[in-house]
Length: 313
Image (cartoon, rainbow, N blue to C red; front, side, top):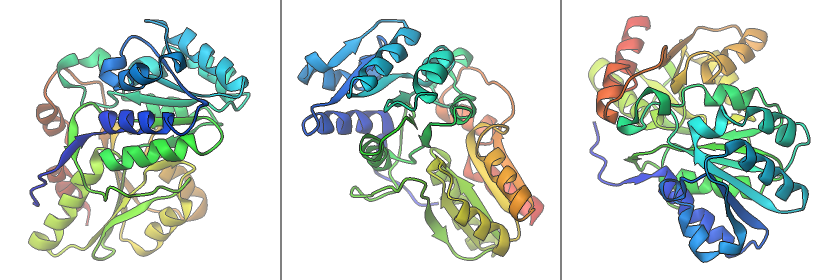
């Protein structure tokens, strides 16, 4: 495994990009819910207080205010933790943002399993399925700090509602600082052959790359790793390519199996090229623990990716 020396938090780097874009776009504003320091939107608040609105612990009101701002021609960012910004204001997201297709950018942090010791109530493992049920939303899940900045830039510069999913801890930086993302795109991160294609996003991309290296060096198995950073629009062309020229597809995600990437890939291929699609994902809610403890217990790591491929090759 390669020793990654540089790490960065997606939430922190996204916060820096929001601050930067605030200097070039006077229509950009932020609506927060009492967690501004943790989401790093406090930097925007300090510099542009007239464009920052903290509603307190009132997530439904937060989304309604953002919808009103968007309807008035502004570009509002909704900012809080993923567990609070997805489940609590679902009706407001559905009726107030998705149905009228308003230009609201929902940028949520502390997503997935790796929320530190906050425990089960803070782990957002169904957020992607919820936003995928809202048809108007584009959805981006960056794999590192630089990709998080590119995701923010893409969302701000593309009309329509977006959800960007960010993590709490610092994670390995695997992309270049000048990376650009495409609406509905994907990136092949590692390609040595087509014994298996590993489709993943977010926190799991680094672990998939490390697993692919182990599979080649220790077992002679040649894998392709695709970073599916855009879940909607989904890059259907790469999904189809992988299904046609790979032994099988393995999806790896820090989310429940149903309603996430595994469901998207399986649904598309069932109608276009029925294929074997396996999943590494969460099967149930977890408990409190460090990132290392949780990902090892629930198999969201390179070792389990290697094991799953070897079992099914």
